[in-house]
Image (cartoon, rainbow, N blue to C red):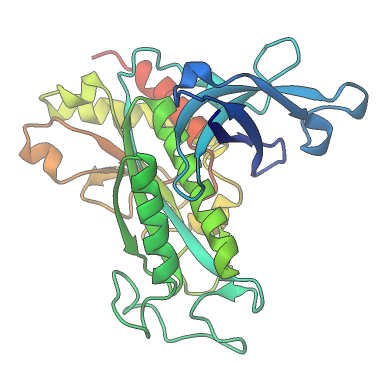
Length: 337
């Protein structure tokens, strides 16, 4: 009788930044289908999600894919439910109002590969700094690209798992990288980002390299921070056909800056300074091809007759894509064409 290893993944209750947790369930004759992933439970008192006297939380499978790093394995992304079956307060996925998958999201996930021994990014010498920014973005060669072996292994793992990765590249700072994932449907976009985060965290264990998701791990020094730019569209934007509709959608974000920043990742004030390709956290702006704006209108949108998508550049690398998507959807849905 064939056995399968199902790795159940979920988000813990730690704030302000939730972390991934996982554990393995062995099942017989698993079909590989989501509907055949049984509900499970865990000790919420150990993850800041329940008191010790009533500690059981439920794991509701919502996404399954092949586990490319494990023989006979599958990865099962889960929502956390309370013991009565209601959504746990930490469950951002349950707040997404996109039942018809009208919203499409492409997340650009930046991160630093981190050396635990030096407590610095890969490529940073123990006693100082590498050369200044310039050669690292899409860099080639041992003096510019650090950790490529792990990054390439992660890319292969994501593709073998069936995740819709659209590309990878080295980023502006030394030891900084990015992958991009797109999905039609906000929930699936979030599912795939979290699974991809898990895969690189676990691959890093083999190399003794950790992943630093903090948006500004090097502080106020002259090094870029890490974002998770959110590219999004719905049928309104994809079929707009006028600049006025794009302006109207962008303007809908202006009075809701605080509401968006609240779910766009911890410590974002350190990253959104108006420098290093960011807008100030205190301002709101939008413009065509403007990477210094809060929301960028891609140059292809006017070229395509004002049809397409928008890029919110404010979400940071540690943000929960579920919560980012939920907030963007709420704002855009309020716009009447």
